Length: 113
Image (spheres, one colour):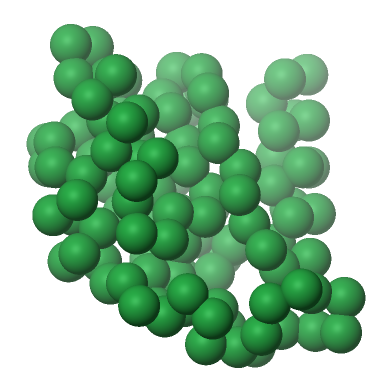
């Protein structure tokens, strides 16, 4: 299966994952808005616009390994639709919006079942 990172920010962890995968055939899928936090709700700790000091171009530059890394720009869970049903070998989940956490947990349960 492939590696996924949900919540990428500037790409530090993604870079480590990409380097780990460099000698394999696995792909790294990165899910984030890449433009900061969207509108949030009262249950969220962060507000709209937090983490806005990043971009897809900055993350691509930080992560490298262009042939093996795919950015999925937008909000979770909508961005999951851009992936096929291939197995997930590893997922690093660091999302800060409550409404994004629930579909990730459901996806992981279905994948592990």
